[in-house]
Image (cartoon, one colour):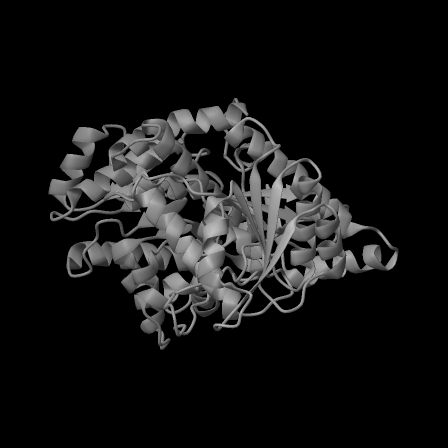
Length: 523
């Protein structure tokens, strides 16, 4: 499991070490130089003669980057530091100059030593660019010359890569990509610049080398898309007694969460999932949902729907039982049109049982508009951004889809506060907010999973997981968020297993679930 912390908690953990004279900057700079050396060998086959540009701000991140640049320069790397502030870390500057690295001041206006546009040529021609402009002590967007450098360089790299003309330099973020909100993952937008009009000034990294511990914003959308691969460097911080702000499950965590049947298990002890999904207009949603639940290993699926859709489901999944009966958890809503009165009534009846009998449930798609004002943490709402905006708007919040996408953690938390349910916000990075302040962020899915029916598969998979651990989640509501995150992980891994590196259909993902779970349980 990857654990991430707030900036305040990381700074608090650093203070006693700094007070004791522990050379944290030296440790960080050494680790950064070693990792960049590896990248240069991979990229060029050698280190001597390679080129690195350091974008250095005024703070400690700039100092880390400058000291790393000095270490690289001593190994024969051509290092140029572009200072984006009138101030810079004196020790780092002295070390870089002593190692014969170049130092240029980036400024604005005709009298500036180097204008941002000129600096881009050096940066784009480099093998590696180190982004050390801002660190965890900064607030808000990058501004001034630094903003322009980051925006121009980012646009150039994006254009070159999109056009297939070359990869451009590898971008390594020092601790965090400059400009992200380190605690929330928000990527701030900026006012237009007089010479340039960037929508944002975060330079997307290929690799973020973060020191001491992962910072929450590195795992949270939308900033996680700017962080690239995240690697944590141990510099000796003690965070054992600090509660993490965000967690991300890894494959090894799934085995401890998945309901594995005991030798004396039977179908009822393994969980019975009731599913209300699909309508005559959307029968495929019902097929996908029940297929996922069966493949995930639930003991039994009971399907409730119209006779025609029930016949379609049974023709595809003969092990499903059509009609009412005992259930331990529910999946409600995939493919349900709220205007289909018969199916909407089935959703209402199931929700009444959920409240009265304390049964876990997944509420998806068409059922989201049918939920009561207050639920319970063992109910998991699974909206995408537009559906979450609609759910919140119905409860008096002034928010639209774009705002949810810009601040997903804020709005997922607000939905949890208003409904008391666990919220799984679907997207390129899946965000889960649950009881006790639990936050999980999963980025396991390939982009090919953005396909029709994928959400139906996730709803059936998660329902099966809740059914298998129904008594546990009611007894310990904090477990629900972890199970939702595990479902997101398995969902993403199954998509990759179905067709590694290529397009997948939702049914192929459902069919890949059983093998994916087995592989994860084997460890």
